[in-house]
Image (cartoon, rainbow, N blue to C red; front, side, top):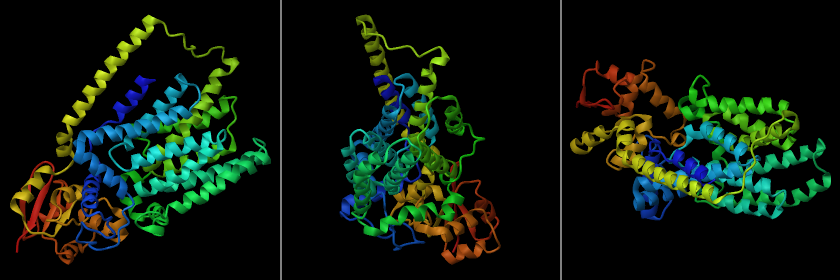
Length: 473
């Protein structure tokens, strides 16, 4: 079990390459320095002063505090531990320990791994995993439900994924009612459960308002989910492309939840079907929701698979655990020591490569040039680089756009991508309207190619990562 936990941890420890981590760092720094949570945009010239609901403010304080005290290594270790803990809770909820539970948990690991990283969403991953554990264990210990309101309070200040807590409570209530309707439980059991579940739901909803933005946070998750530009332009908000190998584990899980109910003698309860249906739809609609699907689907797959294996008609069973003898204990200790050495070495290797990973993903050379030469702005920057510029160049160079798509809105997102792809006849007019005097984009950006042919634009810097073009007076 210890080796399994360490294996999950070392798999979750990876270099910090998320484009948003940079503006999270800067915002966390500003909050700690000013003791004030931003209420308006600080970083762009296109939306300067516009209202901003920084729903991740407490996560940003944590991210910057870890970075300031322990550098990249602290961020890598802590967020690796967050992911591993969330998955260990999934393992704890899965029947058939250790073998069946271990196999289905590993399948969930590979399905959710593309979304891991040093990002506030991983805190939602852990919170959602904890909420599901509390909800399921509350059938035996109803008082566990009272842990969900304080969890929701913390969650609402860490990330807007807090809505999952409320959503899970509603789905469990609906599922419990359907369980009664289909004969899986009695009305007496339902009434007894709702006496605790409904007050918990009401209190969990109420405490969300205890945040720097008050009741405005209630609407935020729904506004994000219905943002047209985020669905159109941001890769993690689109549906998974099953032509890509990284989504094969997800496909296998979905097919498993369709096939195993036919093969297994274990009938799924309506409550389980409701949770599975909603999260399957969410995962198919958006890559971002795959980790939440994994939290629900893994224990259900484990339940079905364990029941199928245990069915006497199969004629075989997984081997039972044997008593631990002294030689076996010594061998286990040796294996554990070796694995711990591997984990420590792997962490050192990942941390040592952070600067290389940064240079590979972000325009470090272009930033060095800007800091040394100070060409005049305003600047049109790549969407994925906005956060990096906020960390490296704020306040000297306000950005055109960054990863806060909710701040910029559909219109500006459309404007940026129409400029990037040189769409329409008025792209030059848009540059003039914004007063753009410098662009920092990848060398293969269509706008870079187009501006090379426009009089008055000159290449000031270029490498394999970025090109800087400046407009001459």
